[in-house]
Length: 437
Image 1 (cartoon, rainbow, N blue to C red):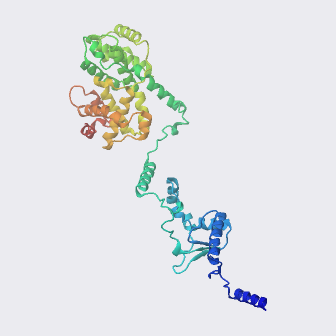
Image 2 (image 1 turned 180 degrees about the vertical axis):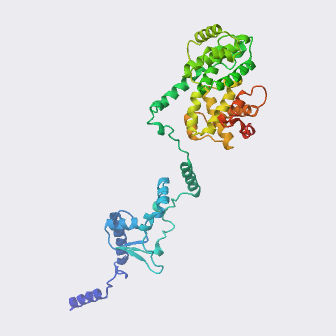
Image 3 (image 1 turned 90 degrees about the horizontal axis):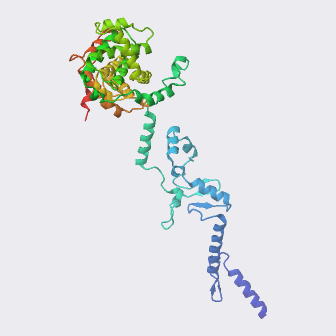
């Protein structure tokens, strides 16, 4: 009986024992419920380590598969908060953000959670606890407003940047244009132009002539050149031969006109198809010299110059720069008008031929258009920036202002005819002189 009563008492105890773990059963001096609860916490930690990391508070996983858990975390990350590079920002702006709209899902209702597959998103629990660090993919990574403005300014500068035109593309089928060698030719001209230049102070070694006499001679030769209807390159070579000869040989003023006539005769033999005869040159000089004197000076000048007639003059460069400027007849005539005014002036010898040509084209553009204009194409082919041309261009504008005054008006009268479109009537570019510091 005692044993049966003990067994029934134990059965009664089993029946009265709670089925859940909310109650507390004392076994000796230990609390059985607390021990089981502690074991559950340990199992939860082990489960999290198996999954791969602590799950985000707002995600409740029905299944503990790693792929489901990772997919839920990736799905929760808002694509708007992903890092945006400059290139990616430009692509978004151009494509009107089609991918971001496609990746968006219907918004969850305000009253209840939204579900996706096996993942449950609870809006009320999306905020992490205060003591928990914010995940990196939720940090604010959008570009700052200042950086966005900088990106827009850089992109606008790239868009409005002026292209360099191919000025030789239309001449590729012209064998006389030698397009395949044109860049090498002008590189050689730039290298050799120093040989054809003279010292800007060579007149100091002359004892009987001065720079004013030189100006009178060249102004007269401009009229002779126009009367004989010679080519433009002949005039530039004539002036070059005169300066190179005077820089090496002292000449009395009585023979200065003879030097000019012989220099033009040599330039005609080098450039022209039909050369003026010696008798015509003697008549032009009012029979101041004989035929023998002309031929003797021709021989003497060639020996002094060592028969070096192939030098790059300003004409060689101005033709190229006018092509780069896409000039018309009016711009071409005005450019030659300004550079011929410079040929007369002794002070313009300090500038190399290429700089004179580029400054003449630049000053002509300013005169016609009324504002400064020097395109990237002109700068590329001339190798001169606008700042490098300002000094020479301002001097040319000053020569243009006084071209019709004084005694040396040969260039002005030449370009005052219908043959040159009354170019010398153009108003000088006064604003270039006003901006001078």
